[in-house]
Image (cartoon, rainbow over all chains, first blue to last red; front, side, top):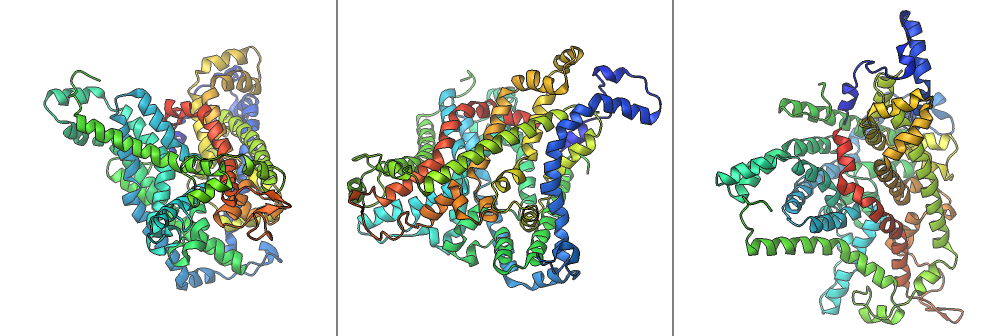
Length: 329
Length: 296
């Protein structure tokens, strides 16, 4: 996606009427271009304004991580404390617990979530009937548009203490179960929720990649006697490789983001030991204790590590001869 | 089916059919169960011992109760309002910026685009964002649920890529006739981009409708809660809608719909707009509007 920034070349197509004006020096050239482009600038202004205010200003607001910030005196007058907040953070056991939980969930989902959309796409792509394919696609895309509150609620109704599963078990003389509050199976629960909600939607990009594979390759190899499975192994999977690697990189860069709302909603039912992830840690620590600077420091560490992970992952992709997310390394 | 392909075995086709059916059932069954329970009478719920999976006596009682005023009606209004206003603002701002950035070589094109793309790489974090929103006085204001997320860089990039794929000649001819850039966008570019605009509008609308965490952060006043907050409070956390009534099943001699049916009807209300809008936009997903744009 980012490669567009690189591709947009120097002022090339001066196609609008004013673009034909003769250039006298740099300043007047700029004036000519401004006269041509001022409307475009005006159009970009609201979006840039919103991004500056709600993205870049808070980005600068992270300086409170180096302060003993108090909302009553403001950023200007709060005392500077250097790296003290970060030192505390590194000694904080609950911070490490949250980090560990986050990484564990990411790793678990990499194995049990990540391949699902790929398998689903390959399966669906092999369905001959176009109408059946569209029908299934439309059904499995849908949960992507449900809120997390809704998804967790639906799971609760299916698998919670008063849910359908427990209800059916009890009606047949067994003991009820409550999967929604069991910390031992929590990682499986959240992965199942993610698969239910997003695996269908995640398939979209693999379907596009499958459609782009040259069909002649299949025909040629079939004529040469390659079986279905060999064609899958030698043509389909290599055809998907660039997309798989791209998504792996994005996932790696996102390793510390396992999603906020999903965990926020279930943290109390399951308990902090299993369900506290970095995002919820930052939120609860700050909201409960009012230690703004401490929360900001934790958020900043998470953001920085995430940034490093993206850059490293991209570097790795280049090393493997893949395109990565952006071209220039 | 191509001539060179071997005929799929009967077993293979059966297995494939079974898997696909299982997947569809996994997605659809919980929805079916929720809708059915919301429409069930007290008797039907009692007979099923809770959630209803086999249709019995049906009634709209839960929905009448829900919309006879009170928490859910108000929350639904709030959510509708935020979704409508927010989507209008987001689509307008995004389309303007996408068009404004669609001509490489225009003044400031590269730095501005860079500013947009950079937001992908680094998120400012919850705490500084909260402090900003509170310092500009938006706590307990509905604007706090709209403005911070009004522009999604991803949507902007998708739309921009689509605009760039429109042949320049079409726009140039309008410009030569003296049309301003705004006119070109409104009269030529947008009508040619209905599909992508519909998809972007739906993505924004769903985002606003589903928004839950911003309400947790920025709305202290629970009279202002949107629907997702109410859903969490009364269904997920199981708080009773009729506090103080205890286990009574009547209010002033009137038979109440079953508590479970009311809860499930809140779920349905939270679900419905998505289900209603989805069929209209869904064809654009399968046509690959988004993928085409990402690749571009």
